Amino acid sequence: MSAGSRAVVVRADGVAQRFGSRTIYQNVSFTVAEKEVFVILGGSGCGKSTLMKQLIGLIAPSMGSIEVLGHDMLRERESVLPHIGVMFQSGALFGSMTLLENVMLPLEIYTGLQPAARESVARTKLGLVGLAASASLLPAEISGGMAKRAGIARAMALDPPLLFLDEPGAGLDPITSAGLDALILELRDALGVTFIVVTHELASIMAIADRCIMLDRDAGGLIAEGRPERLKAESTNPVVHAFFHREVL
Image (tube, rainbow, N blue to C red; front, side, top):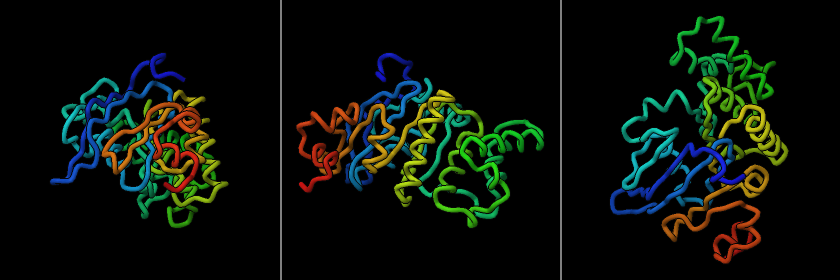
């Protein structure tokens, strides 16, 4: 899938992030196309999750600009929030609320739907991620993989065209992680959702990514962009080569 053949839904231009005198990355530029699974990858400490927080407006970039769905995230974040969904690494479910109540929460905040309608929508979203029978359970009563699925269901509550997933496979066994990868592709194909996924899990990257960018801590920025299979086969950058071939530098 080419970024040039579909509408651009995210545009980052010259983005940098500094904390005090420390520069995490600088001059990061890329676009994300509609209906892509776009992966932000790299080693630990390279700034993957920080970049995602910039994309959803939680952190203002030290330099550069970010547009999401045609809106400047620095000035128009509140206009964008109802149109994006976010699943944080832990799932970030409220422990005192059932899965159904967790998924209903965005509907309560952002819509005027009556309680019965909110419940109906939330049950539909749980059904999409295979948790229809678990709606009454609390987060403490479910597995890590189920928590990730519930987090995706909540992120989808408002039918956003764009979903952000932070390390969806972290802490999961290979079978559960593969199931989550399959779910991402199924939702992309069935609903036309664009995904931006932060991960360093090589198997997931190769399974789901249409395109990816790679950040590197030592380089202080972006060192590769393209289809993962092409980067694996053709990149001459030693860090990129080592990452995709699981080699020691």
